[in-house]
Structures are given as structure tokens and as C-alpha cells.
Length: 451
View 1: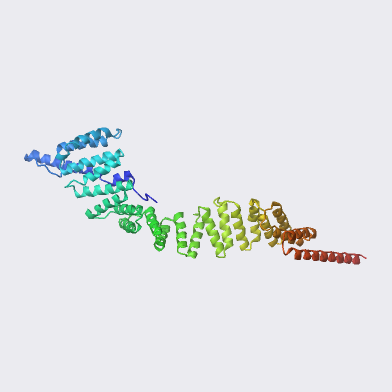
View 2: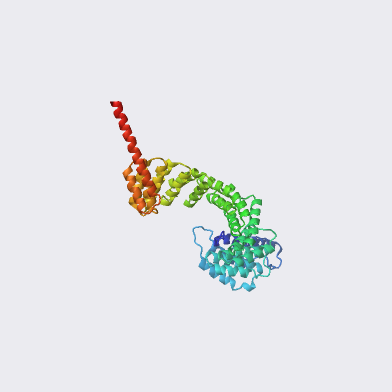
């Protein structure tokens, strides 16, 4: 979570005072030109002001500006030469007025940032703040630039301190400053302090008629969740769903309902997420499917699981097919349970899967298939309860009147220690005798009517 919404170094330049020097120079040059024109008319003795650039300073700065940012776009900046000129100008730093000092340091920061020397840029901005009569607007911009650069270097407390000083001398608040302060406190895990700044940032953005970006809502939401403030996280996430309709926000909404033990809304939200086609992981499909099964809607749960398989998101493994089979059985949909049960049986390394498949066929009264599945279960082996499997096979064979096969299976179950096997053996013998008796009576009747 580190670095959430932190500004890049380039953004720090844009929000700093790099352009201030150019504008200030232009303004000062205008003042100088007007003064020069007046001099030509009135010829008064020159007066040195701490608010303007001298003619010499203006020429030097103009030369450096051309080196750093040539007017001819086909030319490359000459940073090496610009540094030499800056250092030469810096040799007479103490003779400059405060505005000239600030202008010089401003161009130094421009050079250092363009050459990716952030450490020197920071030192230069800090030096600028030591100028006694530094203009308020330049002090503000220096502090804001420092706040951004400190954030880029992950010096979060320094960033907070610089931006807090900016607020102390600024007559107006800034959405950007609020966001940077929130970012600093967030990265220090000071969520209680960060949240009000995010809210203030959002308020200013809305007042300016702009839309609050989704990542700002996300920052706020992360902090509410970190603080386990789920009611406010719910409010924020609902707003995000309404504004942005992003899949992640729907999933977060369902998770927050879960944190609040609101199972009804959690499942409804998951259902809407599924209906919108926003589910992206196997866990999400499983969560919704099992939740539906848990509220007596297993058939809907099975269909969700099948949709996940069809989308290639839910893996077609034994566990998946076993869950799908169970959901269809819970819904009493035996016919639809057969296919996933057979797939599960094929994937099962033991015979338990085929044993379960035989049980489903038995529920369908398809005793022949039940017997075949039970035989496959015994052939594969490694059964959890081989005696029960043999007893079940005996019952299935008995239903199709394979008395000899049923007798053998029941005897095997008895050998394996099944307590019900002897009772079933008796029932098999009685059933066999009853069938033989019926067959004799049928044969006698046929003979009687033929005679």
C-alpha cells in the first residue's frame, strides 16, 4: 500500500515553482523596460529595487533560460553550459537583491530537476526559504514544491511539514495540498489524520465543478477498511459503485456487507456482480454458488458454478465437479447431477467417485447403471468404506434380480465386517425364492391355458 497516489518527480516540478522564475523574469523585465523608458525621458539617478532584476542579471538569466529551454525546438538543452553560467552567477550571490537571489535559485532547481538531481533540488528549495524578503507567493510555491519532492522521495513527515507551513501562510486552501497531506499521513499509517484531508480535497474538487477521481475514493475507502470503519466504508463503496460501476467496487461492496454480517445484501450484491459479468476469479464464483446453496437456492448456485466453468475461470477439477454434483442433489435434480458426478468419478484417484455416481443412479431408479458404477468403484479401489460399497452393489444387483451377483457382493461385505450384510443375504435368498415361485406359477398358468 506504500506510495498510494504519490506524485512523480515531474509532477512535483509542475506543481513547484519552476515556471515561476520565467514569469517573474518576464514581469521584472517589463518593469525594467518601463523604468528604462522613463529614464530616457526624465534621466533620474537609477534606484536599485529588491523587487526587480538588474539589466545585467536579466541578460544572464535570459542566457541561462535559452540554454535550459531553447526557443528553437530542434535544439537540445545544454545543461552542462547552463550549470557553468549558473555557478558563475552564483559567485556574486551576496551582491544580489533578494528577488535576484530567488530567481537564481529558481533556475538552479530547474537545472537540478531536469538532470534528475533531486537531492540538490531539495537543498536549493530549502536554501530559497532562507531568503529574508522572499515574496510570499514564491515562498508558497517553494514549500509546495518541497512537499511534492519530499513525497517523491518517501520523506513523508518532511512533506507533511512543508505543506503544513504552506497552509499557514496561504490565504486560500488547495485541493492538491490536501491530497498530498492525506497521502503523507496515509503512508505513515496515520489514517485518523489523513481522512479529514481527503474529505477536504473532495469538497474543494466538487466546489470547483470537477469530478473526484476514482483513486481518491479508493484511498478514502482503504483507510476506512484499515480502521475497520465498515459503515463509512459501505457509504463510500456504494458511491463508487454508483459513479464508476467498476467490477472491483462491486466485489468490495459484497465483501463489506460480509464484514457487517449483512448476508442478504452480500448475496444480492454478488448476484448483481454475476449478472453484470464482473466476476473474475474462481473464489468469487464459488462464494456466490455456495452462498446460494446456503439459502436454499442450490439450483441457482449450480448454474453460477457452471457459468464459471464455461467462462474458463472455474477450474474443472474433482472438487468443482463434486460441489456441482452436491448442489444438484440438494435441488433434487438427479438427471443434471449425473454429468458432473461422472466427471468427478473420472478424476478421482480412488473409487469413491464412482461409488457416489452409483448412488445417484440408484436415486434415479436406474439400477443397472448403479450396479455398473459400483463395480467400477470396487475395481479402482482405495475406497473409504469398501464393505458399504459391496453392500450397495448387492442392493443394486438385487433390484435387477441378479441374485447370484447380489449374493457374492453381500458375502464380500460380510467378510469385510459389515453388520447389515447377513440380513441382506437373507433378504436376497427370500427374494430369489419368491421370484422362482412366481416363475413356476407363471409357467404353470401358461401350461394350463395352453392345455
